[in-house]
Length: 125
Image: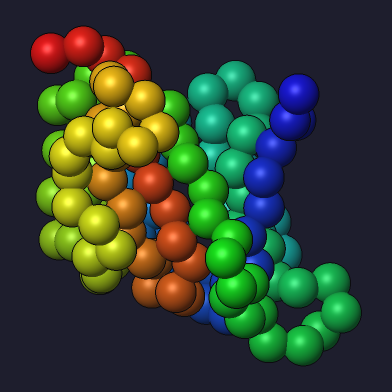
């Protein structure tokens, strides 16, 4: 079981301007900011944006992506819309992905740093 997930960013303010509205769609909020890092969650940190600890610029890992749980297909659609409206780029529009599961409904975007994120639900229509 995961405790939390962190992504590197070279510009925490820009990343927060993207993630604040996008994660709000999924019921998460900013819960802490410190030393160029931003934490999101509900009552505890489940997702954070951080400067790399080695001092080198953050870079996107090949093949890495993070999927956030969405309760409904409407939330997936809204996640995608809000992400694109706030500087994200398309990496796969909302829709069924039956190759994963008959009810797998997801949307993929890249954040302003190029990280691939997704919202997914398994709600039957």
